Image (cartoon, rainbow, N blue to C red; front, side, top):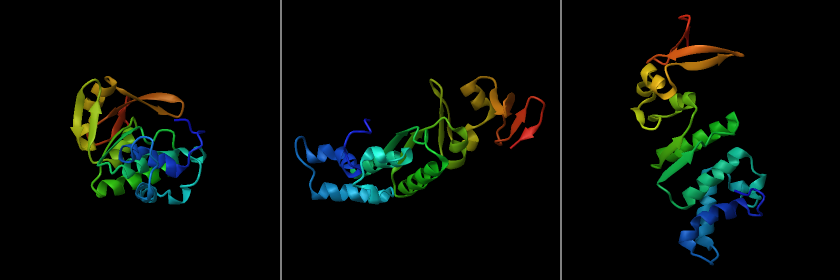
Length: 182
């Protein structure tokens, strides 16, 4: 994406409706209304006339979600939607995604953030060239599954010093000296 391209947030959302509009035609009032409604659903209705490059990383992510909503998508496939955004933007995105999911939209997203997956999602799929495990975070994040994902051990950092940490089926960690960690 060329964020310097002179296009408004509203136009960026409407660009996702090219199949409805057709080639070489301008979007009409119905497409503009759908785009405005989609921007409202992601909390960006007041940014419609702003140049898309002026938005923060989290706001840009919401523009892409609005674009999918304007297309009336039933499934959102999101690749690392939280990478490169601050905690506040991550929280805003989670609120939006939870609301969309409660409205019947299916969400599939990839993340390397195991803590986020454990805390925020009902179902987790662990992949490493094949399906390692699928189910609730509690059933997926076991010592055996994590060992298969990452090798025989997981390395965690405490300050600047690496510490070998094993994660048990209760989400508790035990370091190489037998100390328990939450």
